[in-house]
Length: 303
Image (cartoon, rainbow, N blue to C red; front, top):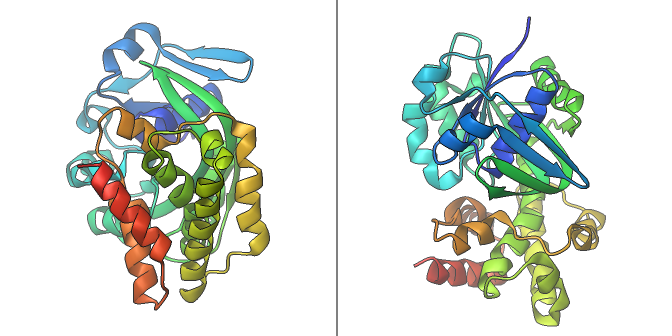
């Protein structure tokens, strides 16, 4: 039996993964807003390396009530829209629906669990560089990989089955027995590069690394996140930290998602990516002065 899938939040990440799953034969339904008319008329275009593919027709809808109950829900909304989840999620549920949040930062699984029940919730981390370059058009510089984990414990057969769907769609996807550790590992890159892209005056990742001052801040921020993670029982190795720096030049002049939001005048995912890690680190007794400084800079920039 084919798995039915809903993508809630059809920005760059949701549209990319949903289209990839569709190309692989998945029954994917997209919740869309600003791009709905364009996608209905022209489909979804994926630009990857030297290749371009168009998915058409697309099952795109304006409301989750129109989509109806599905087997899998992927939440790819910005965390700034999480107040909408209590309204958006219930129409998508049947007795066996699994809800996967692919959002950035900390605290998302807890919120989703409060709406749909903890037993339904899976979390995912997306290591990808993709931007929406036109209505219904996604340009991917780095397809990267994905990590999935259960909110309530170690990976299950269903976690591995979801990972297999992505693998079949050409996305490297693995499972972790500690979702919390995976979330902290993702923050190592996100906190530094997403934050400094804005705090540095609206610059790309290559410009951050080209600045000795900002490159030094990258390393300090990564070390602080790792220290907080370790204090909470989640090991992050020195080699992992260094890898986050050495692999970044390969994506070129990349605009992280926070910079894209900032330049478009949209609300930043301030609390999920910077505020909550800072609060949890402080609660664990870890001094995080560089993160506190960046958090303040981003609050000022977002006013």
